[in-house]
Length: 78
Image 1 (cartoon, rainbow, N blue to C red):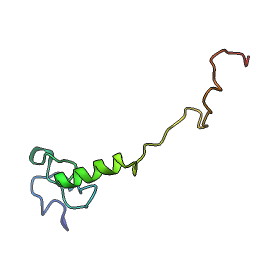
Image 2: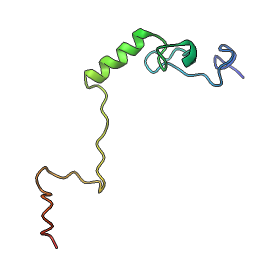
Image 3: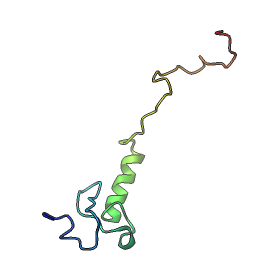
């Protein structure tokens, strides 16, 4: 293989890059900060979640957003 994938990290099945700084990440067995390269990058990621830089999109079953209170469960639309 070429580049800095498996050749520079013997024993790794595939090269994994840090989600923050893109440096190679050691396997979970040797790296308590996995999937990050260091505790610093792990804290940076946590700060981004807490600062609401990342968001998980809300998914509706019908694809439409329903205003609160419009589905009262009475079944009166039949």
